[in-house]
Image 1 (cartoon, helix red, strand yellow):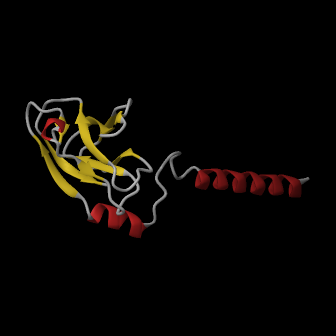
Image 2 (spheres, rainbow, N blue to C red; image 1 turned 90 degrees about the vertical axis):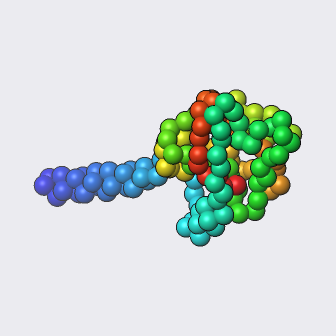
Image 3 (cartoon, one colour; image 1 turned 30 degrees about the horizontal axis):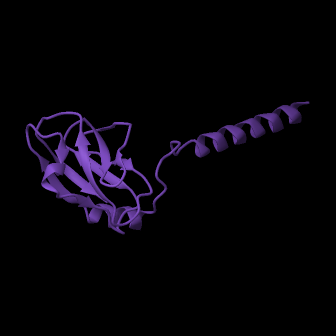
Length: 134
């Protein structure tokens, strides 16, 4: 009887450890190896969105950002928390806004084809600086 309790305890502990290990990566987290992420962020460019504008670059200028083969996603990092979405020239703006956390990279759009033209659309007219990698 004592042997059965020990076996049950070991099995329960094994199940618990396996569950915790499997849950260590948040659902939906990007699964990139270190080389891919370094290449993507290594090619990041800085931006400045000026007071009064809600987009970078301003679409009316006809200048847009273009995705590259360095990243499969569009990533943004700002100096403070702000809501952002991607607007594609061909298909329009994403419906959902995503909140950046100051100083952290945020994937704003996933699985984007190379050569896609887009701009970043912010929910505020405040002056914003940051980086983007695509």
